[in-house]
Length: 326
Image (tube, rainbow, N blue to C red):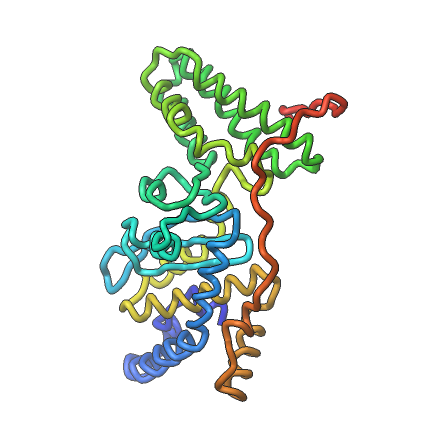
């Protein structure tokens, strides 16, 4: 079942003749559509959990639907994956998850880790820009002007600082030492991007950091927030593989079927369950008692997430300095 989210039924058998294939294709598609209808109610609690979590991730990738260009979005946390399949790349797609807040004119608590795609800036939530994307931009500038000493010096320093920021969360150090090191890295980035530069390529990179300090340093104030979006890119990889193997969906209904099944299975896996076994148990319970609340069965209410930190811990004069080069 888990693999069925990454493969289309047309690949069931290359050796089958056309007659057999046509006979099997319709019932197979119907079975998958019927399967997706059962856990459809689970999408509501998954959306609610996404909004309540203080650390969220978002990314998108291209998709095909009946030969037309579409996109698949992934909005996720460490415990939830919400796939939005066969959509456009417009603001309205991620905005639908924040609709309950928009109706009340509220801003979502917490942070959304994203690349610098302009659509995300319109969402009612604080953003953390991905340092991996920024680092690639700096590396492109470095490769474009190999003989420019000013460019090479700037890129070498900034790439080093961005790399240290991305490695810092993985280091087995105390919170106090983490926040001390994070603040020192932040000060280094700010100083590097505030320095006078003559080359327009350097100035363009500096402007990103100068104009977006509110979207670049949330990771300094809360260790749970990563300065990069690699988690979301890894989580989206199954959809990239599915697109290459299946060439997308044949219809909007097929896209919705994939959307529900992948969201439920991947969210169950994130919460420590064997997704196929757990979904089978839920379907069996539903067969025994049609009044079973399948959403509560699969995703029972859990404890509220801890709020984000509001400030950096004060420096500890007795703590040993952290070597940023490690």
